Image (cartoon, rainbow, N blue to C red; front, side, top):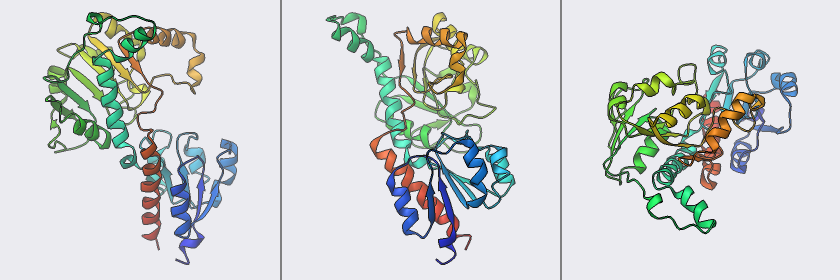
Length: 320
């Protein structure tokens, strides 16, 4: 362990204590700077062998070029869109994440949003609080007998499909980058089968140049039937203006969105047109919204940090 004790790890974001304890107990030299600015990171990154981040800081080429000692960038979570992974790998830097840690939370949250959407739970809740008791107006729709189309069948898509297994519905999955990924929870199909069969569509894809605004006007026009939309992946997978048009036309019957094209921390909210789109979206009763928390459970907070710490330990042990 003498060499491993010299490995310096920089932690930039708050995470569960288990990550710090596990790395410390395995001989790593840790520095925690959750208040650092991008400038401070850029000025100091040359001194570290490993970097642990969540989503507060963008790790781009300018940072990576100065990371002369860096061997590993570790993301507490699943999404890697704040890291220039391709460039990091071209520099010999390995990028790690921990989707195993929050897949169960995402699967449960996605199912919860779907049940709330189909059974008008959020509408009924608001009405009852106002003294309204409208039963016929809140008649729900069952999952049973529907076809659920999942786009992206990795950790999150599989977790959602697993939770649908008791609902007597058909689950089909499309993943451009996986072969033979179908299992007892979902049948792997092509994109055309998604378009022709889907009653409920759920996105579980990373944000890439290919998936950015994948849900747009042209995409919606390919579906044979009206459908419900779920998105717990990344906000910019779904273009809000095209979703609003699809809801207005009846092609999309309702939406459950944990992520939005423009989120609270985004400078894009200062754009008046974007604000108008969001206000329209927020006014719709057939839209269920949550603040990017699908993967945020008490349990996932621990698991995300634990699984990542184990991967960091394993990675550096193989370098010795």
